[in-house]
Image (cartoon, rainbow, N blue to C red; front, side, top):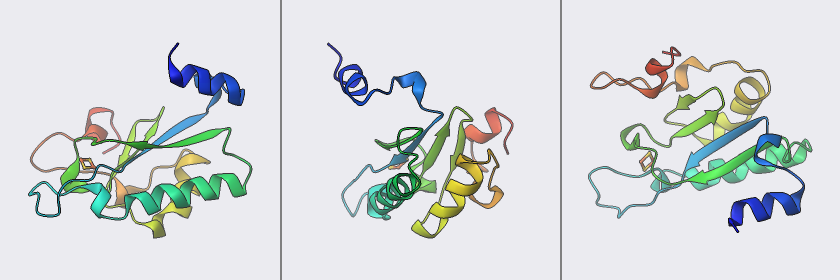
Length: 131
Ligand code: FES
């Protein structure tokens, strides 16, 4: 059986049970990689802080914060994407976590300054009309 399904059944929360999924890229490349990586820009601390903030409010079964591998926006990292809205944030720091929780997770607001905008290619936010 698929491990994810087993775990969610045990927790009593199905995949449909979460109001939102927040994926935080923790991909880690070698320090000299020209692409860089979110894992070298404190993305693990972002995830830990967000998970702790959700738990402190008793919301860890309502909103799910997960580690993600590379999300393909390495040059904008640390990268965070929130579904189902599909809003993509870049350059996120631990200082942004409380605002992301209050505005984007709990209130469905978009934090303009964190939106990934890319002059060279269409960003995921542009594809869905956020930027
Ligand atoms: S390493 Fe984070 S988006 Fe690629």
